[in-house]
Image (cartoon, rainbow, N blue to C red; front, side, top):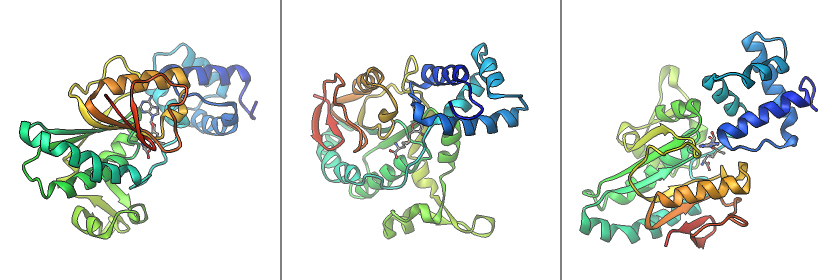
Length: 276
Ligand SMILES: C[S@@+](CC[C@H](N)C(=O)[O-])C[C@H]1O[C@@H](n2cnc3c(N)ncnc32)[C@H](O)[C@@H]1O
C-alpha cells in the first residue's frame, strides 16, 4: 500500500467512494489517493488517514463524503472535446429534429450529464445557438449536471482562462464571450445570453430519482462511464435511455464502449447511440 495508507483505510475509502458515486478506484490510484488524503487529513487537523477513514465509516457527513468523491474524480474536459460529436449534433441530429419540433411547437432539450467545469454544455450551447439563428422561434434548453458541487459552482460562473477557449472558433468567441479586464485580465466569460440557456444542477447518475422529468433529444454522458464497472455502466445507460425521446441520442466518450453492457440502443457512429 502507498505510504501513510493502510490497506484497511484504503478499502474503507474506496468502498465509500463506490457506494456514493459508483466510481471504481483501482489499486493503481493508491499513491494519488494517499497524497490527496494526507492533504485533507492535515486540513481537518486529524492525526492520520486511518483516523479519517474511521471517522467517515461511521459518519453521515455527506459534505465530507462528497469532498472525498471530488478528491478521486477526474474532471478533465475542454471546449469542443471530441469535436466529431458536436459536428454530429450540428449537421445530423438537430437538422433531423427541427422540422418535427417546428410543426409541434415542442422545445428542443439537451442534457450534459457529467459536465465537470462546464466546457461541454457551453460548447453544446454554442453549437445550438449558431444553428438557431435560422430558427429564432425554436425554444431550446440545456441541462448540465455533475455529482460535484465544486465543479458546478465553477461551471455556472462561466469564467475561463483565455487559453481554455483556444478550441473555440474565433467568430463564436467574439460573439458569445466577453473578455475580462482589471483583476479578470487573462480570462473571458460566457455571455449571459448563452449562460441563461444552460441550467446547472447536481445530479448523481445513481441517485434514486432524476430531477429532470422532460424527455431529452440528446444526452451527452462522456468520459465518465469509464470510471464505472459494467453493471453500473448498464444501470446508468438504461436510466439515461429512459430519459430520451424515441429516436433520441445518447453520446458517450470516444474511448468508452458499451461492449459487455446490455442496452437497447442502436450504434450510429463512434460514441453515438440512438434510442429506437
Ligand atoms: C472527466 S469528466 C467528463 C467531463 C465531460 N463530460 C467531458 O467528456 O469532457 C468526469 C465527470 O464525471 C463526474 N462524475 C463522476 N461520477 C459521477 C456520478 N456518479 N454522477 C454524476 N457525475 C459523476 C465527475 O465529477 C467529473 O466531473
